[in-house]
Length: 325
Image (cartoon, rainbow, N blue to C red):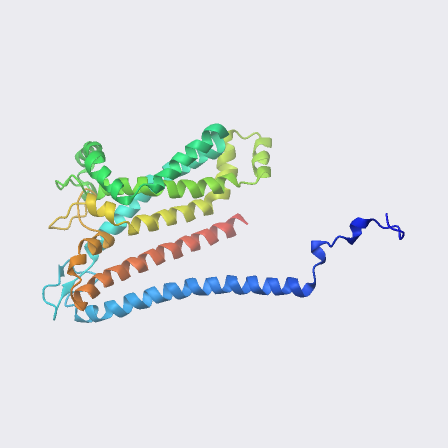
């Protein structure tokens, strides 16, 4: 104790008593770094879009077919090429959408099991196992789907075509390795992504929401339905859109699994090519600016498609937040 009657501890500087100039300088630096990061991301997106447009425009100007409606891809005549994307667009969108339909219920169920039902000693290692699925290379999924999973999916495909074959989308077209098989493999590939994000969101549900539901006499499922799921809905939507983006852009697995077909068909059991697999398998044709521009034009459509998907997801999330408030 000093002669002034104050403790010697008073001599220790309080971190909160730092000079205001230092604090403001740190805030300014952090704000500048954050703003710079945002500008870099926007610049990258704009740069990619500008590159795709500049490279695709000359080929689109020479295109003698309707790029959005004509089912033709003939780049033999470089002076007057003909190429369209409706077949690629259909296979890309349908395979990714089916994958999302298969993956989301399983992923949400896994996330709820790991956060609400499973004991911690089981949930932790099980979560690690699910996360490890994301580390499996795409080519391994493709080979496994074609060599192994196809043998189990084909009986299901035959049953669906025999039962619902009167619908065009379930018509049997004689393809044993098509969109339906690829969508199941894609669903397995995106399940770890959706599960991991959904699990983290569900785990952050405010405890007083949970206790309030139990206090009103809710069962565990009623608590999940009224407290956990509403709180985690924006996160699940974000996770689903992230998984959809992965499915839309998947290349190697889809290229291995989906068989090429001569004629277009609306059936889920048909073959075809996605934007990504078409570009990857045709890399040997990038021997002229016109041919390269045609494939870059297809890539531009995929870029726009993923951008639209993420924009829609953002709108849905913001509306969900506004509704919950």
